[in-house]
Image (cartoon, rainbow, N blue to C red):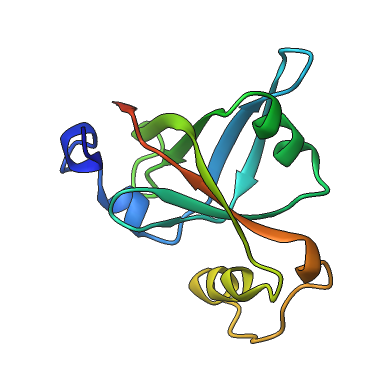
Amino acid sequence: MSADDVIPADYRHLLELPLYGHLGTIRPDDTVQVTPMWFEFDGEHVRFTHTTRRQKYRNLRHNPSMALSIIDPDNPLRYLEVAGSLADVVPDPEGAFYVRLQNRYGNPSQTPPPDAADRVILVMSIERATQQ
């Protein structure tokens, strides 16, 4: 099933705008961790910048399940949640994807982060959506 089959057309724009999403993952002790995240939707997957040294990365290595919630800025009672799993981890040792996202979110800098050597792109499959 493709993302187009899962995401309601009238909610898709929430994935396309530079909004902060709240990404939930499952810790090794089976508790949930939710963190605000930058993201990019490529029409099929959601991509996040992250490092291999943080808890969220360890969570996804333990359990690849993940969900992203995005609130409609025009109506805070309206939201989209997409859920799926970690489909891929792409090395980004130059921090190029981080730079792309910082530009998307309004910081026109071309400077990679200090932890660029540990940077990866987390690629999330979209298997289901919930909206209100």
